[in-house]
Length: 211
Ligand code: PRP
Image (cartoon, rainbow, N blue to C red; front, side):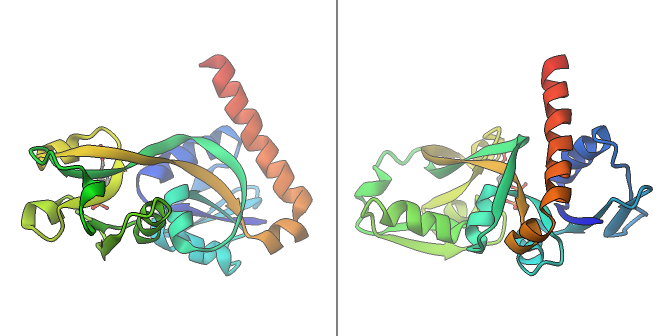
């Protein structure tokens, strides 16, 4: 049986739909965080996005579905087996709409973000000094309340930025959703994992052809 870690929240629904199309019908009782399916081929554990790499790194789950942003922040190494065709977003530097200064001209760029590793690396690679302030959510409040003039955050529709009079100053990258494997699990269960990945690939290809 494969144990897969799935993120609670918006990515769960999409992943569950895909697994159902592959014939894995997970049943999850109310408020339950472990789901199994009838054929006992797959067991899913539902965890908070940010904790998902920890479960896969320690081998509690052999596989996981996780955003590339969260994988990068974790610092752990995984095998990335498949890019899923949903949940991709832009990761951007944003600041007040009325501010016309170029962020990179600041003597020290002050940025609030959940993505501290990504932000440090992105600006240090360009030789831009950056002071990163870690927040765990509602990052858009930082410029509004004066904690930091800039944020680095995911932007999907842009409506959260707009609601706080902020705008994208620069797109720093794109995040994707990855099917990841614990490297040791992958090596020891190579065939089972390959079969699982192939089922996902076939379902995605079928959907692509029909859609
Ligand atoms: C994410 C992200 C932005 C928002 C972007 O937040 O951190 O705040 O969505 O979406 P939009 O461009 O469509 O408005 P999330 O809902 O995960 O909450 P959080 O920031 O409190 O973690």
